[in-house]
Image (cartoon, rainbow, N blue to C red; front, side, top):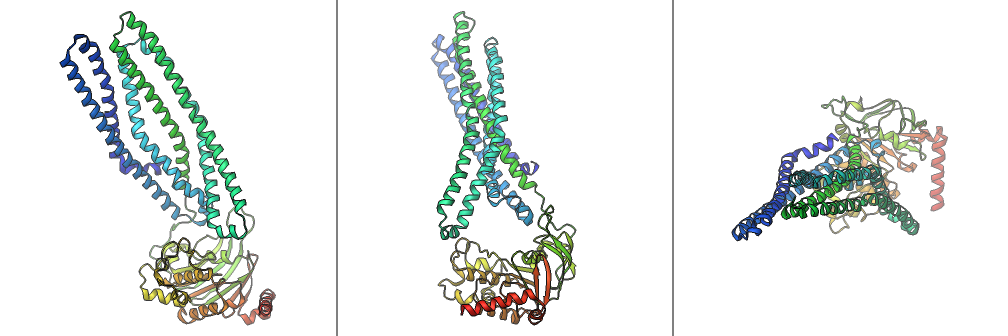
Length: 577
């Protein structure tokens, strides 16, 4: 929770100012009934018009001052609340950026979105209300009780019954509501997950005519959220009628006792009227205070969820990396490397990998689904950390480099191509923020993306829409390759990134790599043998192990797996022709 408190620290002076304004507002409100009492008990019996006007003007002045302090307090609390919310969202977002893949897998994307939005909103609203209610209510409560006791100690004995009852009601509701609000936020996560998956995969949903199934899934989650909300807020709602019952019972008791005291001339009429004002303020303050506790109950549940994000330690960091170290060349070495995604998983994804790649070499990686191809190349830029063995880049273990320097030397085009909202130019410049138009077009030409870009009326300034919906799968792949090439990496990893382009375009891209990126080490994961058959070496993987390695000709002679894949693809090509 210290990290959450750090987001409030810059606003401490404003919080002090807001608290002072709220306290002053409450004090002036409390003084007004005292002046009114003097008017009733002194001015009216004496028919002293001047006294009444003078005291009346004093009441107006106090009301204006109370209003001004109230407005100032509200403005300051809004500034503090919004600033705190912005700081907290930034702190969460920056923490998420430090996560390794294994950290992100602990939280669903929908849950992280909820924690950045809904949970933070609950915390900032609670802070804003606290500056007003948590200051104003105690000040008014204590002051009103003191002033009430000064008027009549006997009447104030009523509080000995009502106040403990109120405290018991609030405490009971808080204890019961706290776990419910935690469950409420988790149900919100579940609903957001369904919505996110549906919108992200809307093409799949429609192509399989699964709208009804998705609607039913949404309704189930929505109903679960509704039921949890009813349960949580239904518990909290009990607070209001319980408070009103105690409040009006207290007023009736004061009327009964106070009426007898006025009748017996042991209490003045003005004092009884002022006493009613104070006791009303006491009850209202208690109601506001209890409402604040209810908000705090939800805020605590939300705060714990936010703290989980802030306190999640990144699974990988720079540690003892040499900050001055740069990757000297594109050589890659795997020495006895074994890897699994979770430490408690008994199955190894990669087992005893020994592979040595020279700088500038082109290596194809072939294997069936689940053979460990993507896992293997993911260890090079430290997207994951191997549990056994050593991965070296440029002759040094990858842990010797900072992740920034290592990943700037390695460009990876992933299986799932991702483009962001904005123009093509904006997306390409992820590879090099200061790239000129000439450099952009050169990279596009190498990736064969210039062919379709020239047909677009806005060229590089074409808006891609969210996730690149305005381009086809093959065009998206070529843009992602061009983006990777812009950084002029020492190591280029293509993870099945030409699967959506035709054979002729695939051949052009490979030819461009050979002529324009001779000094770059290229690792090409492919399902098609044709995409890797001209590589310097081809690695064949099966069940997390390297089973064969060599040139196309060598593997055709010695590798049954490679030969079978090649022949099946050739037969398929002939059949399709």
